[in-house]
Image (cartoon, rainbow, N blue to C red; front, side, top):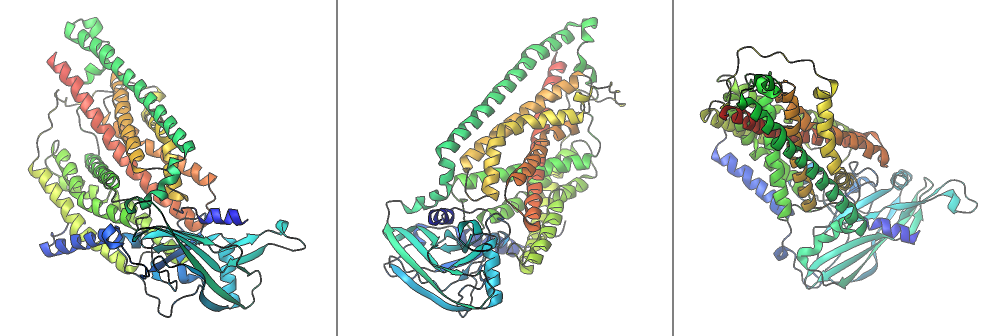
Length: 608
């Protein structure tokens, strides 16, 4: 039992068109964001101590082990607390992440050992005992930060009646002693761990008043690990031999699929297309009739219905794609790393805000290639196409978090800040991009003239229609990334970091390549049967990978130990937003690849 408790304690738990603002508002915004990044980014110069220096330990939150989204303030449980509870000033990202660092009574001085130090002598009333017992029964853990290093421990343990003799029902015990093990290199702290000692417990099975003496110990040891490598331990699980083998299998699987698709496309280009062009240029009327895609040259470049919405999808998808690229760059440069409090949330807000100009420009410029008026509607749609559903989802989840009293509930001040950023920065940048796209507009250069009346599409087999192509267009890319996707979900909703940014970047590139190649192949198949309505279909079949991703979300939840309405809501709510973003990105990539291919083959027809 001792070994089990210590092992579990050592787990890494992860669980807008208005007048542009003045320069002072922009300067204040970017300065604030700069401080937000600097506040959570450790540097060697800020983490050097002399022997005996006081290093603050901050308590953060508590929550059930199996529900990473359901966390509460540390002092929601009746722990020993200082006379004046002071919350450390949090960045925007920390608030969005549900972090709430608060001072504590622990006195952990640099390189000073302590054994059995008294934290406080506390008289627990019956209702306080019930709170602790409820926490222990739900397998609650606590999280703290020491020198910007996260550490975890468990609050108590349950001994089932099968483990005891002559007892009725399980026994609940509260850990009253915490053992800290710290490692240092020179004058810098490298690592710290917290162990809840199972040999120092108090029985809290009954709702009776009890007196508890909470204690702690800390032991310092020297290590050769360098300061710049101290965060590597949190990604250690991704380097286990078993997971390395699984990852290699995933790479080989993806590589084989890419090679097969490249072979298929090569056969299409070198054999079928070459023969089609030869028949067309030869002027043989009988053979010419066999070239199905050539007969729709007057319809293939007719812009699709709901053009404003289509351009908005392209604008938002391009924006999200560039945002993902920025996040990968930050991760590969080491700005984003595991347990860098709030850095990811801050990065998401900053990059989305700055890239909104891309959404406005893309939507406006593409729309103006076909229609001279009405581009403002497509720009407005691109500003709300993703943020609208995201705002609704976050509002619902925030109401759920408020009802639970969880740390995930956003304060009113944070909501106001986000609305101000959206109103005074995102909307003006979106409008600026739209204006630039309008000013730099150009006419769509189609290799073939578009006929006045569209050609009738012949009856299609079921597998050539949109649902069949979406199934095939989503299944193959999903099968190539499913293993790494499972590791990603385990990192987001589990207890360890099972993947690395470099690996995710490689899998993302593989996903983009597969989506583009499949889109080209399926577009050729569609045009070969004289079906010229390929615009929306290329977008839908590219984004259909996200539907398979959401299906895997359901499977992952069913196999996990997550429970409760709050965790259910947060899990499926945020996964729906993630999958929706992937749908927009991959749909954009799929359409761009198909458009490039269609232009290429019809330009060749014109040349012939």
